[in-house]
Image (cartoon, rainbow, N blue to C red; front, top):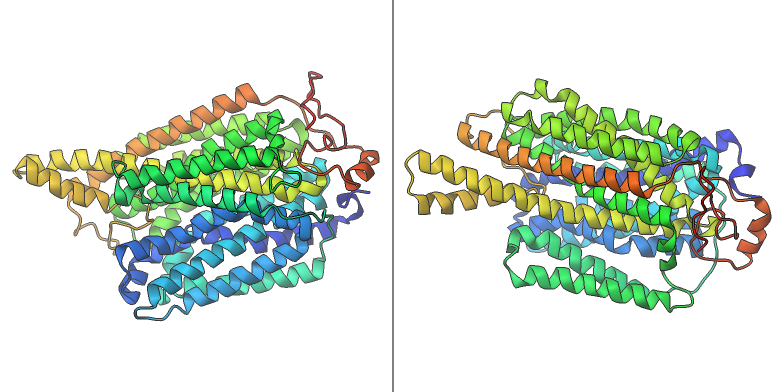
Amino acid sequence: MAVGSATGGRSRNLILAAMIFAVAMTFIDQTIVSIAVPKIQAELGLTSTGVQWAVNAYLLSLAALFAFGGRLADTLGHTKMVTLGVIIFAAASALCGLTPKGSLAEAWIVAFRVVQGAGGAIMFPAALAIVVQTFPLNARGKALALFFGIAGGLTAIGPILGGFLTQWTWRAIFWVNIPVALVALALIWISKPVTEHRPARMDYRGLVLIAAGVALSVFGFQQSNIWGWHNPGTWLCIIGGLVLLVVFYFIEMRTSSPLIQVSIFRNRPFLVENLVLGISMLVFIPVFFFGSEYAQISLGKTASQAGVILLYFFIGFVIAAQIGGRMLDKRGAKLPVSLGCVLAAVGFYLWAGKVTGLSFSTQQWYIIIAGGGMGFMLGPSSTDAVNRASRLSYGEATGITQTVRNYTASLGLAILGTILVTEMRSRLTSSLVSQGLPRPRAQALAARLAQGNSGSSGGSGSSGSGSTSAIPAFYRLDFAYATRTVFYVMAGIMAVAAIVAILGLRRGVQEEAPAAGEAGEAGGAGGVGGAGEAEGQPVTDETGRADPVV
């Protein structure tokens, strides 16, 4: 009998709450630290490189170790791994908050940000696998809509919470994770999730290759705005990392007990959903950074006020996520995913058209539309992708999807940051020349000013005072125009995601695999395939076509 069928509704909801609290910390920390960067740097005396790594080390570690975390969950036990991940994350958060002043500060905070990311990478795949195993297929969309809706909303809340906590002490942005972790551990102990796992050998060769490949290439993306795209080091890191990932793929194809069953990519829905997720994540995490910078620089808002503005994005996101989850359960993934991508593209396009007016009131509804589009598609695409795995490989499938999401989010920050800097430099040069500055001096000053607001560091170019008097009017307007270009590119990216979803996904609701096949799977039909595919039951759409059995 499947685990989900043996679990009561009340117990399921308690387990869902426990997992939401567990992963809440990882989502908050994707954006909360960026708000406190100026105070952290000032108090600890960090170098520019050090403060960059205080933000980026977490995201880098998270991206590099997701596949490892998913494999651990499936082989050692999901509840055990989510508990361990929560403890590691909370302990690392406490130690980040206790960073000493002096020469040790930089190495200390960067090291424990890496440990935080490792804890999140262990925790998240296990948590999502528990939710997926707990709820039957026909209720999974609704459950994971709450899971992803709340988690996505917490990404938006990060800047707001960070703004308020930083007014007390920047250390509080790390310490806030401790009570959340205690609640998560208490709920895990009370709900006692029951899932199945499959003991197996760990593929350390694959682990080294994928961790090094992801870390090296993501590092190249992160450093592109510091070193520049003309720097050979940037390209050596990116290309070197990609080469390692290609080597990883071919070695995994020949490994008897691989870290990732790469053959799952033969499953068309899994491949398409990951393509859609990868494309959309070029936009989803970056929008919080660029939106926050625009609010503080062009609109003159404080850090806290900038976070409140992003709540409009969250309003659209969380409402649409619930509708999208129900649509997934009733009609399948194609409608909510395709609709969401189209809606997001329209929302970003309309939002871009209003940012140069420097009036937030004219942008509100378009921000909600853009957030709603992302809410419609992110949860259903993630859920549908994980549903394609066998019950004993949900953690592994989650590790794959989260690696894709974090990898492309880093790429998005690098590319969109470069676009922002290039556009800002061009406009600032023209503005400075028009005010009588010689062109060579204008170009040099514009390059320096533009580089300070690339978005990749998560920093802000404003003081956060809420006053625009210290920022020249031409600078505010030039930054708004640069942001408009970035948002237009985001609209184009989501349009591409919509085309992939419309052409690549098939209509129809995925069906639960028959219980009769489960015994065979537990007995050794390991690996990742469609839900039912590992049992030899292909998933068919309403046209009668079957997805390939992996």
